[in-house]
Amino acid sequence: MAITDTVLIISNSFTGGGAEVVADETYKVIKKKYINVKRCSADEFSDCTLIDAKENMFCAIFSIRNMITLLLYLLKIRPSIIHLHNFLPNLSPSILMSIAFYKFFFSVHVLQTIHDFHPVCPNSSLFNDFKGATCTKCVGRKKNTIIFDSCYKGSRLASSFKYIRYSVMRFFLFHRYVIDLFLCPSQFMLDKLSMDGISQKKLLLLKNPMSLPMGLYNLNIDTQLNNAVDRNDILFLGRLSKEKGIDLIISALKSLPGRNLHICGGGDLLESYKEQTILNGVHERVFFHGYVNKTELSVIAKQCSLLVLPSVVFENSPMVIYEGLALNLVPVVSNIGGMKEVIENLGFGFTFAAGDLCDLVLHLELAFNYVHKVNVKIEIESNKFYINYLETDYSSCLESVYEKNYSVNS
Image (tube, rainbow, N blue to C red; front, side, top):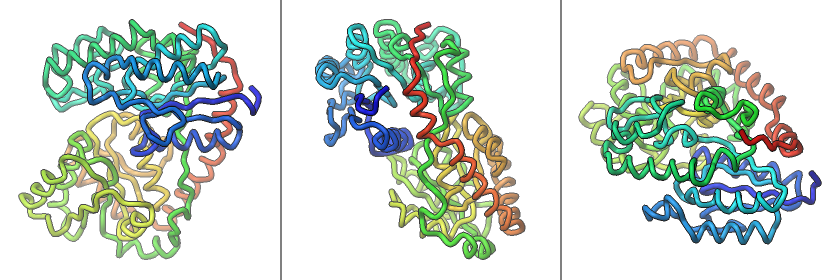
């Protein structure tokens, strides 16, 4: 592949949460190598802007407009590489038809970085909303379980919509045929795709890019760690939604006198969580900061020793753990999915039984004791992680993948 070849990166958006950050980072690192790198998303600033189809039920299943718009753009720029990230729900499965048509007439290498479980789960999350629990019934089995178990919002009607969308994507638009190679940020994700019948030849483990080197936030590591005894607070960073387990942290704070909780992020449940802090009598120790920029986050992090991620869903490869480490915070996370895998790979941090209040309190106390007693080791582990990550080098790995000819359709 020549540096003058065109690369098209497709994502719901290039601004927002973890998946969007990874898509944007992919664009940045590939832009340094190849001259013609284009973006396609629902963002107005993209080179090819598609409509946000998620607001319309029919367009969310198949958007004729997005299909035609993307196809015309593909014929115009003639990319040699098409790299998809998340395209559900914003862009709809219809873009797969555009890519399949283009792929039929032109030589192109199609990749997709998998950020959620949509290839194996119609609900995209391996989570049953009705039961409020993780679920792997669909993996390797028929997908209509989502309807009978009312997995999406506890509604059979809404779950039927998700099932139809999944069926269109997989059986009508041949998602697994269109994609030459699935890039999995975690072994947990790779294993689930393999269990669902996707050939190992089409699966590759590729960790997400980490663009948060030590010092990015202008933190004085030595000063911060030496004063760890004065840092009594806990940080939560992410979306305010039920599956993130924020209610569990708030409840845990009752058993942690003298500790404060900083919640950075937004969502529809903000007012509900504020009410919960009042009911639990901890409202004076919980601070809701909303969305914050990196400078604001660095100031808040200086008051904290721990980063907590108490999700009750299988996270894939949560970037927030890496960000917490760059901020010199010790991670305390649920022991499921990609969260557990990250901690095991790092050899650093604490895991607790997902959804277990007593176990969360226990491990938060253990983590605080660890911080206050072993400050030097935190600094060593933080820097060791960064050095190891540099050695992996997402950019080099991705360029290597681009250079190879993956054309396995099984």
